[in-house]
Length: 94
Image (tube, rainbow, N blue to C red):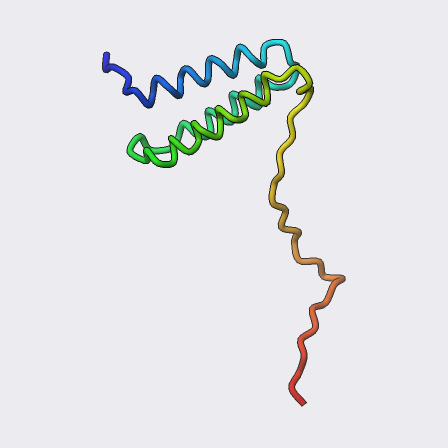
């Protein structure tokens, strides 16, 4: 069995810390698992991206560990579909 790199060990350690911190907070475990599963598809050679996500995860872990953290939310981009009731007007040169 191949040995884990230092970066892989850091990611696994962060994942375990998240699971421990979220144990007593309902609703966090599925979000944590989904986030790590989604990012597991990142190529191993994309070290800069992985290190960025590690730093971001460590900041999020500190927030999760705070006793006043009760729920988690995320901002997502929303692109509404083209509404046929709204017509775009363009200025026509006279």
